[in-house]
View 1 (cartoon, rainbow, N blue to C red):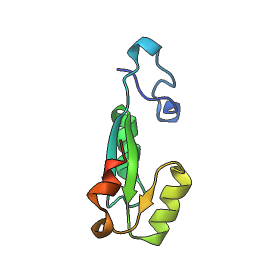
View 2: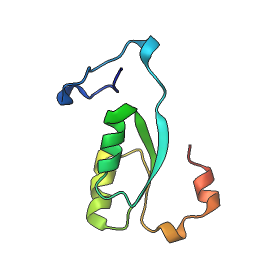
View 3: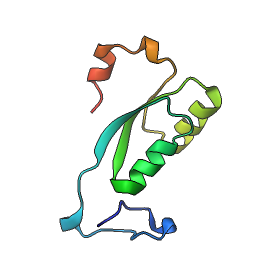
View 4: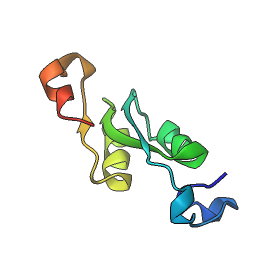
Length: 88
């Protein structure tokens, strides 16, 4: 099976023919830590994060550095349905 671009360092093919590419599945990563689930999901089959929720400041900094286009929320208790509607 074809793997996402940029995974060659893990011994996986770097690029896939356009006919074999599948759209990424989007997910919200709750209690994200430093993003290990997101890395594994990308390697496993193209999962794409659209939102992180993590309260630890060190982990937030790491997520913002590695995923600059993905919002990071600090407190899951403050997320509203209205805010979540805008993602994905």
